[in-house]
Image (cartoon, rainbow, N blue to C red; front, side, top):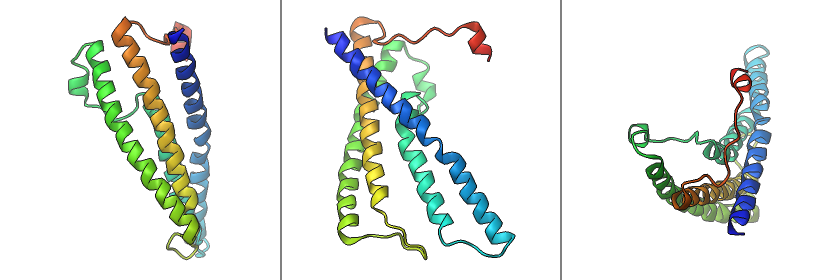
Length: 184
């Protein structure tokens, strides 16, 4: 019964984070187009835009922040490999839990600060200090959402690691990869 609840929770979080991580990747070609447009506008037509820099800054921020949970899910984050690769699977899980607690603490602080800044940005109509001067409230909301997504993924990974420590089995077994799929 408890295992079913954990599997339901973790698989739901994994699907949500995977969906958002893959969806946000659409901003990468948009970012490239904005930068290419600005370069062409500035150096070919000698008519720089007032919006391209701010737009590219927001796009790259969204990519990094909202892609963070997906990177955490895929274990694409920074690790001290010289130590991590030298220990047993159970010790790796303990390391993951300890670093997860630390990361969750930082995400909690991020959410609190971003929530306060979001309130200020809405109340006082904060804008980016540039010629275009776009509003910044969406940026702070994005940090709240991305911090919450990362915390959800951390909780999911911690549940999987704790389950492994107690049972020596994966909560959600990794799908088998065929040799044909591996080569493709």
